[in-house]
Image 1 (cartoon, rainbow over the protein chains, first blue to last red):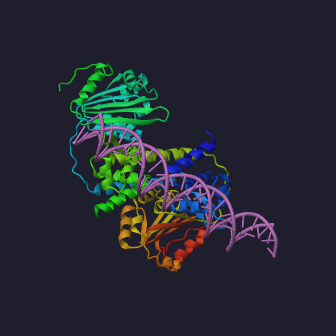
Image 2 (cartoon, rainbow over the protein chains, first blue to last red):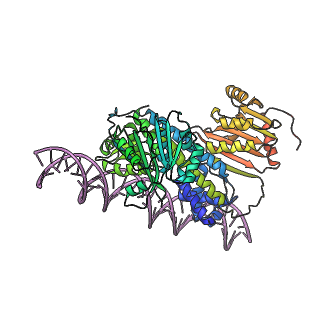
Image 3 (cartoon, rainbow over the protein chains, first blue to last red):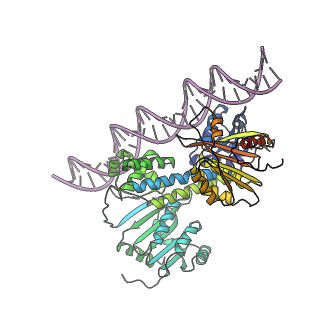
Length: 268
Length: 268
DNA sequence: TATTTTGTGATTAACTGAGTGAAATAGATA
DNA sequence: TATCTATTTCACTCAGTTAATCACAAAATA
């Protein structure tokens, strides 16, 4: 990867973290310079010289650069670890404020707990992972999990699985041997198995650009299925809650199709 | 505090975290609703109904809401702890990418280590605190610290101070007795003292809207002085590095003015 | 003093997001 | 089935923000 690419990436990420383009470019420029003037900065970035001053001023206000008020002014980026620490502090403070505010905001409605058969969807690997872990932690009887991609076996997931009480049945499948082996090592309490997910592929039918991500069944009353768009790595999930016996149909079907290993069915 | 206020604050913080106004309002609205439709949402927020759809779609893509694709569509906010966890994951991933990219980006200049007498400035309590802690950790001989505000005595600062080797002289002053007592308890190795900062106030002279924040001297070669604008709580610091003997002048002056307690001066 | 460099401010252009209404779609009602 | 209503999508305007350029003042250098 060329320097230009990494610079470009750094600028992009900084913008995602809330900086303006000029600010991001100046910060990256200064990170490559031990110390620099507005002129030098404008030469190695494509920020017009006359705008460097404003950008740096804003960066200084955010605690990301230091300024030497001489003539010409000298600028210097705060060391990377200090910068990330500062950004982290800022972030933590915000999430904190958010949590406090949302907790205080009154519920506007008592919520009608109809909880009939519902299917919800959500996106984003992080969010789906968090939800999966939550569902697993809430399990009281049985967890059935199939992973379609190595990257989904995170430390948090392993923790959630290992923290389950030993009375809870734990069945974990994988798409290939190496992943199955890793799961077997990481989660000793689990019964692991190998499952080609051909059935799901066929079921999905038309669209070949979809890879199965995870499949999760908790206590026979909740199901989560996610797919991954291979090109973008974007993960999307559908999530069923509040099932009473509708899910049974699905899980039976899975069993019938040989996706899950045969075992004694629980009585309803 | 009224519900409206907390809602407003939540919306504001969410925007700082990168959401658009409509997205922020919809998320807060959904957090107050167990579940809701576009219509309900538009009623309790001031997002036009026709734009709720876009906003929710974007929120779904960020993993912050779930969607039930029925008619009418039902929306539901992800639980608060899951949401903050997801936001945190996002943030960590970004900082990670940033660090990797910046480390790879080539240095453009060898850096001329002239290190003459230089005075730099920086802003923001977080950034200044991080820098102070860093400077303290780097000390090899002596740390002199004066705190002008209770809020500056953070856990991180205490850690930095206590992690110093015992051979390093550690002198800490405070503006009032209660703060001095707290420091004395928190940092047993330190010699604490009380110092009215009248000298500095007088020196600052004209501007009465400035409160002294901290004053830090490390190894007689580095100095950091910060002030706090009482109205905005904004902290600004000037920071001198690379002093050889210029600093001696300053520290002598401080000693002469009685700011610091008298003690045996080190030989140069 | 003349000339270049440095810094500030004003101005314009491009873009993004908020706000509004029309059109298409789906559901319900007669 | 036809009609009407509610839901959803789409296209557009307006305003505020940010990027980009220019003109000019101040400072440093020769």
